[in-house]
Image 1 (cartoon, rainbow, N blue to C red):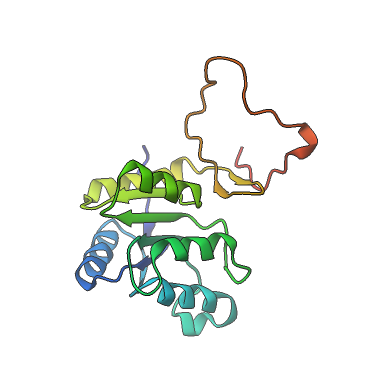
Image 2 (cartoon, rainbow, N blue to C red):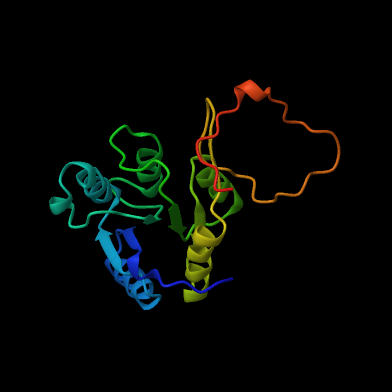
Length: 183
C-alpha cells in the first residue's frame, strides 16, 4: 500500500456528537488531510454540499472529495445524507466516496449501508489505522459505479475472482452501461 500526501484532499465530516466530530477532524488532520469541513448533522452537510454548486463561498470550500458521516444523527441521519448524495438532482457529485461511521456495525446495518451505496464502512470505536486503511482503499482500489433500476453506487463486489459454479448473473451486452471505468 503506497503512502500518499493527502494535503489536497478535502473531507466533509457529518457528526452530531461534538466530541466525536472534533476527534475525527483531529485524526484526519493528523493523517495529513488538507481541508476538513464539519457539519453537525446530515441536514447541515446537505446544505454545505448544495452550496458547492451554487455558492462555494457560502459553503466555505470549493470542493469536497470524500464524506465521512455518522449513521445515527438527528434530525437528518447518515443514511438520508447518503441517499441525497447518491440520488438527489442537486447533489454536486453522485460518485463522491462516502464513508459511513457507526457504532452499530452489525452485519445487517453494514449490508443496508452497502445496498444504499456507501463506499466504505468504519465501525466505532475506530483507530487511526482503520481510518487510514479506508482512505488508502479509496485511493488505491476505487470501484466502478453501477446503475440499475434498484441501485446506484460503487460496485458491491470487492472480490474479483470468478465464483465457483455456473454464472448466475446473466445480462445482454446491450444492457450494460459503463458510467466510469478506471482501467
